[in-house]
Amino acid sequence: MAAIKQMLTEIRTGYMALFAIVSSALVLAGALAFQYIGGLYPCVLCMYQRWAYVTAAGFAALAWILRKNPTLARITLGVSSLSFIAGSGIAAFHVGVENHWWEGTSECQGDALDLSLSAEDLANQLLNQPIVRCDVAPWELFGISMAGFNVAISLGLAIICSMALRGRNT
Image (cartoon, rainbow, N blue to C red; front, side, top):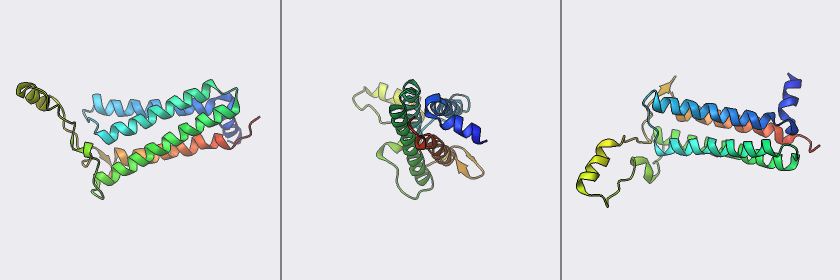
C-alpha cells in the first residue's frame, strides 16, 4: 500500500495528474449519462459544478505535461485541487438551496428568456426548454441528492490530489 501511495504522489510520474483527469472525466460522464440517458437536465448550479471538474481536469493535464518540472507541476496540480475544492463548495451551496436553507442565485429560476424575440419565437422558446429549478433535487439515493454526493466526491478528489503537493521537489 505504501508503494502505491509513493508511486501516486511522486510528482514526476504524473500518475496523480492522470488520476485527476480520469476521475474528472468519469464524474462528467456520469453527469452526462444522468442527463442524456436518464433525462435529468441540469440546473445552473449543476452546470457550475461541471465546470469545476473541467477546470480541474485542465490544470491536471497541464500538471501532467509539466511533470518533469516538479515545481510547476506541483503548482498546476495545486490549482487542480483548488478547483475540486471550489466544486465542493458550489455543491454544498446547491445542497443548501435544495434543502431550502437559503435562496439560490437569480439564475436558479430556470433559463433566462430572450425578450427581444417575437411573440411566436418566445412561445416556442418557452415550450421547448426544460425548466430546471435549483431548489428541487430530481434524484436521491439514501436521502442524498446528486449535489450531496458531489460534495463528497469533489472534496475527496481535492484531498487525494493535495497528497502529491507535500512531496519533495526532487
